[in-house]
Image (cartoon, rainbow, N blue to C red; front, side):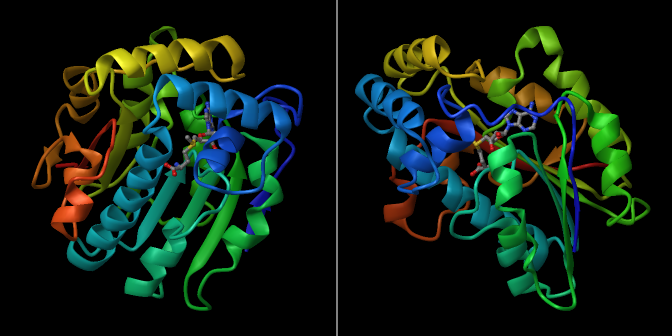
Amino acid sequence: MTSETGSEESASLDTGVPHVARVYNYWLGGTDNFAADRAAGEQAMRAFPAIALSARSNRAFLARAVHFLAEEAGIRQFLDIGTGIPSANNTHQVAQAAAPQARVVYVDYDPIVLRHAQALLAGSSEGQTSYIEADLRDPRRIIDGAAATLDLGQPVAVMLLAILQHIGDDDDPYQIVATLMEALAPGSYLTISHPASDIDAEAMAKMAAALNQTMAEKVTFRDRDAVGRFFTGLDLAEPGLVQASKWRPASEAEANRPAALWAGVAETR
Ligand SMILES: C[S@@+](CC[C@H](N)C(=O)[O-])C[C@H]1O[C@@H](n2cnc3c(N)ncnc32)[C@H](O)[C@@H]1O
């Protein structure tokens, strides 16, 4: 168990300003949030009432994707960037249930997530988990930090779930993802879920405007083509880039749940 702390670039724990980790925690029914986060969360729910269900569909996609990676693709190393406040079915729990020796590195830049790192680090005795406080906009630092826990000569699954919408086009999110993936061995995987600008388009645009008025992290929702570009040069696993609830759903009911996100899992060559 290791945890790297003390990044000067980290978001400060300002409880008067809504932050996405805590707003998302509120949507998921958690209690690790403050009045400002709840107010921003409520305002977003007025614009897009299905956001809480959509957040749950995203968590369900996370669990199915990690299970697929550990069970079917044989992946034993995970780099989960934009971890969020621990919830049900965190990456290490799903991965280590399938493969107890799985190693997981978590990365987030919100100090409140760091406060929960101990819960994230309580993995299986055979596996290893660690936490790095870092900003996705500095992918080299993430790779260098991850190398302390992961063997970068072996495949790694990079998990970027509901985080890339916080990297605006000015920060070149495509180059950030390419830098991460180029540092990894062939047979590595990229998993993305990304809020959509072309599912429930009108309500999602209203919600984006509401969040961008209040929240510390600004959002850029993207359409299916723009999300698909993150997977350029990679081989998408079946069923490809689809609405998050339609990625290998466990049941018809799960497939039909609201999910205003595009989601996919792809392998490097
Ligand atoms: C909406 S939550 C998603 C949590 C989790 N990945 C999931 O899908 O359930 C987004 C997370 O990304 C983190 N985040 C946002 N921008 C970030 C950045 N530039 N670097 C690191 N973490 C970031 C937030 O602090 C938050 O915990």
